[in-house]
Figure 1 (cartoon, rainbow, N blue to C red):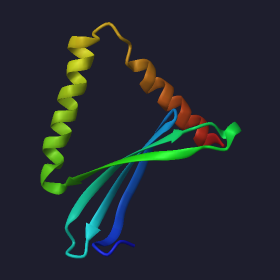
Figure 2 (tube, rainbow, N blue to C red):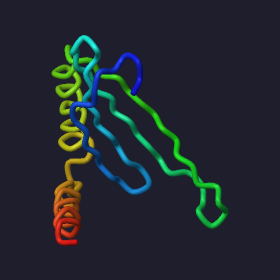
Figure 3 (cartoon, one colour):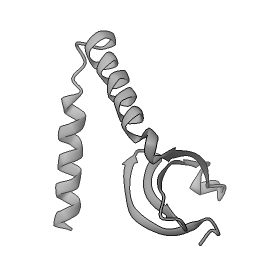
Length: 106
Protein backbone atom coordinates (compact mmCIF):
# COMPACT_ATOMS: atom_id res chain seq x y z
CA UNK A 1 0.00 0.00 0.00
CA UNK A 2 1.31 3.47 -0.85
CA UNK A 3 2.55 5.52 2.06
CA UNK A 4 -0.05 8.32 1.70
CA UNK A 5 -3.04 5.99 1.44
CA UNK A 6 -4.88 4.50 4.35
CA UNK A 7 -7.14 2.14 2.42
CA UNK A 8 -9.14 1.41 -0.69
CA UNK A 9 -12.74 2.23 0.10
CA UNK A 10 -14.55 1.28 -3.11
CA UNK A 11 -13.68 0.10 -6.61
CA UNK A 12 -15.61 -0.52 -9.81
CA UNK A 13 -14.68 -0.81 -13.46
CA UNK A 14 -16.11 -0.40 -16.94
CA UNK A 15 -14.85 -2.58 -19.79
CA UNK A 16 -14.96 -0.93 -23.22
CA UNK A 17 -13.27 -2.95 -25.95
CA UNK A 18 -9.49 -2.73 -25.51
CA UNK A 19 -9.94 -0.21 -22.69
CA UNK A 20 -10.96 -0.63 -19.08
CA UNK A 21 -11.82 2.31 -16.86
CA UNK A 22 -11.26 1.88 -13.13
CA UNK A 23 -12.96 4.10 -10.53
CA UNK A 24 -11.25 3.72 -7.16
CA UNK A 25 -12.23 5.62 -4.02
CA UNK A 26 -9.37 5.85 -1.54
CA UNK A 27 -8.87 7.32 1.92
CA UNK A 28 -5.70 9.04 3.08
CA UNK A 29 -4.16 8.40 6.49
CA UNK A 30 -6.11 11.46 7.62
CA UNK A 31 -9.39 9.88 6.40
CA UNK A 32 -9.70 12.35 3.52
CA UNK A 33 -11.41 10.77 0.48
CA UNK A 34 -10.39 11.06 -3.15
CA UNK A 35 -10.97 9.12 -6.34
CA UNK A 36 -8.63 7.88 -9.01
CA UNK A 37 -9.97 7.29 -12.51
CA UNK A 38 -7.64 5.08 -14.51
CA UNK A 39 -7.86 4.25 -18.20
CA UNK A 40 -6.01 1.04 -19.00
CA UNK A 41 -5.59 0.27 -22.69
CA UNK A 42 -4.23 -2.98 -24.09
CA UNK A 43 -1.59 -2.27 -26.73
CA UNK A 44 0.24 -4.69 -29.00
CA UNK A 45 -0.52 -8.12 -30.39
CA UNK A 46 -0.74 -11.35 -28.42
CA UNK A 47 0.52 -13.31 -31.46
CA UNK A 48 3.77 -11.35 -31.35
CA UNK A 49 4.06 -11.54 -27.57
CA UNK A 50 4.21 -7.76 -27.30
CA UNK A 51 1.05 -7.05 -25.31
CA UNK A 52 1.35 -4.37 -22.66
CA UNK A 53 -0.99 -1.87 -21.04
CA UNK A 54 -0.86 1.90 -21.22
CA UNK A 55 -2.36 3.58 -18.16
CA UNK A 56 -3.53 7.12 -17.66
CA UNK A 57 -4.72 8.29 -14.26
CA UNK A 58 -6.73 11.26 -12.99
CA UNK A 59 -6.87 12.15 -9.30
CA UNK A 60 -10.19 13.69 -8.32
CA UNK A 61 -10.58 15.24 -4.88
CA UNK A 62 -13.85 15.15 -2.92
CA UNK A 63 -14.40 18.91 -3.15
CA UNK A 64 -14.41 18.57 -6.96
CA UNK A 65 -16.73 15.53 -7.31
CA UNK A 66 -19.90 17.58 -7.88
CA UNK A 67 -18.23 19.95 -10.39
CA UNK A 68 -16.69 17.00 -12.26
CA UNK A 69 -19.98 15.11 -12.56
CA UNK A 70 -21.83 18.25 -13.67
CA UNK A 71 -19.23 19.03 -16.36
CA UNK A 72 -19.23 15.41 -17.57
CA UNK A 73 -23.05 15.38 -17.78
CA UNK A 74 -23.03 18.74 -19.59
CA UNK A 75 -20.51 17.48 -22.16
CA UNK A 76 -22.41 14.20 -22.73
CA UNK A 77 -25.75 16.04 -23.03
CA UNK A 78 -24.22 18.43 -25.58
CA UNK A 79 -22.98 15.55 -27.71
CA UNK A 80 -26.28 13.66 -27.45
CA UNK A 81 -28.61 16.62 -27.98
CA UNK A 82 -26.66 19.07 -30.16
CA UNK A 83 -23.89 17.26 -32.01
CA UNK A 84 -25.41 13.81 -32.62
CA UNK A 85 -29.18 14.20 -32.05
CA UNK A 86 -30.06 11.38 -34.51
CA UNK A 87 -27.60 8.84 -33.10
CA UNK A 88 -29.14 5.98 -31.10
CA UNK A 89 -27.16 6.01 -27.85
CA UNK A 90 -29.74 3.68 -26.28
CA UNK A 91 -28.30 0.78 -28.30
CA UNK A 92 -25.17 0.90 -26.14
CA UNK A 93 -27.15 0.94 -22.90
CA UNK A 94 -29.14 -2.09 -24.07
CA UNK A 95 -25.92 -3.82 -25.19
CA UNK A 96 -24.35 -3.20 -21.77
CA UNK A 97 -27.43 -4.58 -19.98
CA UNK A 98 -27.30 -7.73 -22.10
CA UNK A 99 -23.58 -8.19 -21.37
CA UNK A 100 -24.19 -7.81 -17.62
CA UNK A 101 -27.02 -10.34 -17.76
CA UNK A 102 -24.86 -12.83 -19.70
CA UNK A 103 -22.02 -12.40 -17.18
CA UNK A 104 -24.42 -12.99 -14.27
CA UNK A 105 -25.66 -16.20 -15.84
CA UNK A 106 -22.14 -17.69 -16.09
